Amino acid sequence: MADILLIENNEELENLYNLNFKVYLGLNPLSTKKVETAIEEILKEEKKITLIVSKAEMEGSKTAEVLLEKMKSENIKIPLLVIGKSEATLENDDSTLVMDVGVDLKTLIRNCAQVANITAAEMVGLDVPNYFPIPVHYLNRIKSPICKTFFLEPGDENNYQPLFSPGDEITSDKVKNYMSMGVSEIYIQKNDRLKLVNQISNEMISELSFDKLNDNERVVAGDIQVATVSDKFSEMGITKETINSAKKCIRDIAKDVKKNKSLKSMLKNLLSNKASYLYKHIQVLSYVSLHLIKHADWAKKEHEEKLMFACFFHDILLKSDDQAKISTKEDFDKADLNFEQKETLKHHALRASELARIFPKSPAGVDLLIRQHHGALNGVGFPENFSPNLSPLSLNFMVAEAYTDRVIEAGDGKMNKKLIFSFLNRRYPTNRFKKIIEALDKIIL
Ligand SMILES: [Fe+2]
Ligand SMILES: [Fe+2]
Image 1 (cartoon, helix red, strand yellow):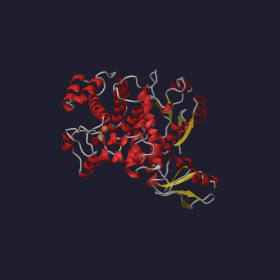
Image 2 (tube, helix red, strand yellow):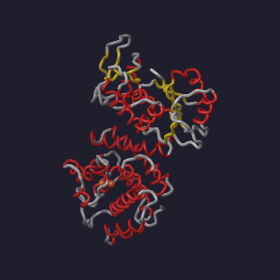
Image 3 (cartoon, protein in one colour):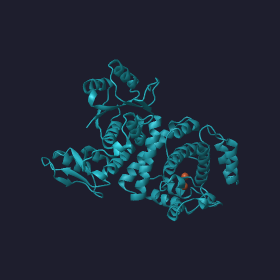
């Protein structure tokens, strides 16, 4: 097996990339955190290395530039994929390619293949053994496998024994136990390998320390994190696992939202990266509703936590962007969705509020806010007239949502404020909305 050399100083990303290189490209991953060690390795093993993947910059030093210079002076030609922005122009021929965000694994693998001249047919036709090995430590990333896994009885070359199957709980103690028996790799049947690797990858991305990621990486990782936790809620409801994942998600989003100095800078970052509508909607809505609350004389500090929870949770049971974009009865009636999708959509506010109610230590009253987020007291459907009994916080949230959707739709820099506000005034014409819409006008764009 030929090698792929990775230069990456974030250990979590290193583990994530290596697993995917091995499975998707059929290359043996070597990795290092330092450019000097990488150069030593290249000088020693030039013939064996099919591709180098390197961060553009690490801790202020221009890693990729240094590497390219050295290879040039030594007259070594190995395809190079650079991850991240670099000041220098690095691409001068087909053997070098630069990409923004490695966490976008599909694009990462595609770019690796492109620059190393590995064709799709070659990837599909990889000579994969019937039982595919991956290092055992990756099991610690998941709670239960999506497919059957096996181990080899140490010393016995062909005796594959069942390890964990779907539904089995994986605990670190159990994994440790196998490791102490001398098991260093687990095996997956050939046709299951991509399924399991995708499951592990999504979990790994969700668990990344967002503080160590740059703005672009956080958008891509955040999007996957929300999608993963949303799937978990639909499948499992409230469990220890979903609770922990949701808490991390809310924390990461809150940090991100507070980091942005203006709505414009937030939008720019969100729109220039690949992210689902649902994710953009949560981020922008969090920003807008936190802003609105600052202008409400009745608001207290605890409302902030409640809003952050609601922004994350309110649409969590929706399955697609097509559903997430719908907020009026007219949109709902026109939507090209099947019966089941429409039923999910119609009841999503109610169902999410039920989850929020039993979510341990959720902010008091947040279930009410989630239930009312489309203006229906019972959390079902999309009413056109709004009950006088909706809470003030719900009214704020509804206006914030309508504004958010318009802002995302308009995209970066092309926002027509006048149009957006005339829409809001038409949709929410009564007096109780007036102050809220006025407060929106003061938002820092
Ligand atoms: Fe929403
Ligand atoms: Fe909704």
